[in-house]
Image (cartoon, rainbow, N blue to C red; front, side, top):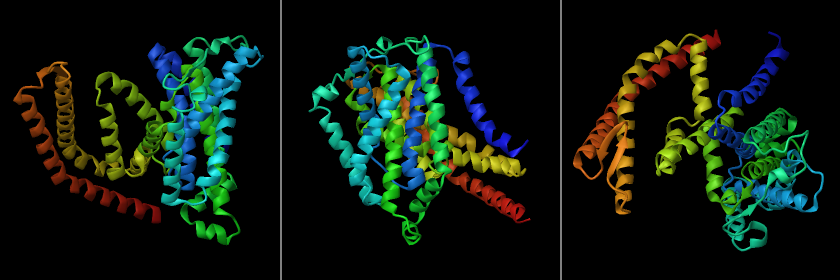
Length: 419
């Protein structure tokens, strides 16, 4: 296979996946989930322009997602009222321009400094805009938000984007274009200089570049793509409210980037898919789904700092060089104990959650792992505690063997690389 074919193959596979996915998962819930995944992929990659590429940890990135969505939804209502010949596919670009405008405005202030100062300024701006959403009711709509009707816009090539399938393909098209654009940005000299600012801003100054200007430009790019994601969200749900520009939305995109892995371009994409899937499915299973997200975030930061993609790359390299078999015995030994500890932790969380529900008079009976149990009795609590404690003790005892196995594998990989 030629170098050009190797370079194009991932993008052709992505395009094919986006086209074929709704044919395989054709239910309304699946289409909605995949639409949200497309929006969140753009949002997470825009955040990674700041964190992964430039080293700027923002706690208020949802501001540009939300403001882009609000401007887009107001633009849709204005177009409908004036009966202008504007189609739905143009609306995300309006959100992107709005995100860019607010990015320039806020970026001039927040990118003066990097590190913890930037993070605190971004947090302050996020809280300022979020609190203003309940004051400026004309623009933000208060607690009810702003609604629209996308089918009232001018049809585009005969499509009015009423069915969710048409909305999915619109989001998929924008997602594909934005992913390519953001990847191309990382391969430019500007993208390389952003990496240099992340790693050593002093050296960037020595070679004649302004770290502050590079941070500002990266900030504006990130706000632009976040605004596009907000515009697509406005089209998909036909409503924007204050929750979409608050701290919860900013923490969600931070979670996506870290779970997937900020050290690679594909990391936020994988993180967005995983978190969106879990958010939609877990919220139907348990009311404690946010607690699971928090625990998963802590676990990834402590034990897999490079995220899911980084963890997969380590194993792919070991498999590619024929060294993965050395890991199998250690994994096989620790897996049952790890599963037992995980099951015990889930039981403890759900039993405690049911006790809180019992305080709300929702009853103590529940179904967990296929069994009907009573959270007010001692037996399930004893089983949960035993599973968690014994499993954690065994994992702690056996985990050094996993470290030893990886030490041997890494030594072998280094030897082969040197050879």
